[in-house]
Length: 354
Image (cartoon, rainbow, N blue to C red):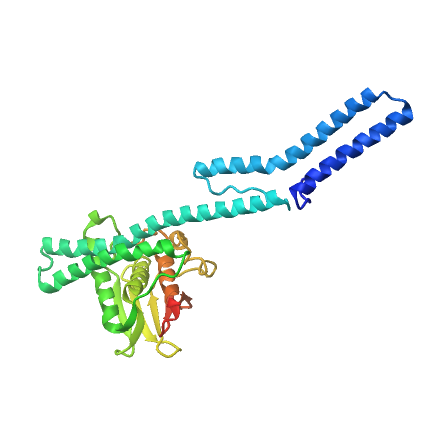
């Protein structure tokens, strides 16, 4: 603690300076009268003592300002991690706390800007790869350019356009509520479309090394919806982000000839739905389960997994949690005798839109 830290006001510190100077001068005058010392000598000593005290107090008062200047220069150069000390209890201490709060806000804005670019890149990769897979199949003669194939390509193109718009909402995660366009939908045909897209994309990746993405055509995808007429309530595009990311992550970490199961059941609450994505990979260690949904966390990369896994960007599960939170639901790693099981619970009402 610095000598001036206990003062609650700069005025109090300056007052202490005046009192100290007057006290020292008085003591020197009394000493001079009692010892017959010349007044000239007393005056000189008084001036020297006052200057030393003034310099000491001035340094104590301006040191925080010098520290803020140094930190501000670092921030101007892009380093938002620096902070100033907040030990003082006066106006300068309050200024230091406000300065640190501003620095934290600027650091958060800069981090969110970088994460937004990474999120957009991550999310756009999936529909682009799917669209490319469909077109390559047509060009290579693997499939005909029939209406169904073109509808699949059109669906990927439309999804690509929607993602460009919806991913921009990531910049408002910490600044407000992102609106949801939730509606009631039939679960089986909805999830079947996602499974089909994932199968087409991964089969094409396995044949075309030029995509730069790992292919896992050997992984079997299975859809299990019970009852078949099960319905849910969610924003279709946001939920697509969740399921597509979970299925893609499961495929990457599956062993050769592995199996990925997408399961849907009624939840405990009326109208709620529970979705589960299961794979047969190495699973997630217990200590890492609470951290896998953090942005840029790539905990499973160091674990032996399927040949198609490239470790990813560490954003897929973070985006999935964000979308589930918007719905007022929950997502987490559930116990499984083999592999990994991610469980998503979606409420049957507008709980996530408040």
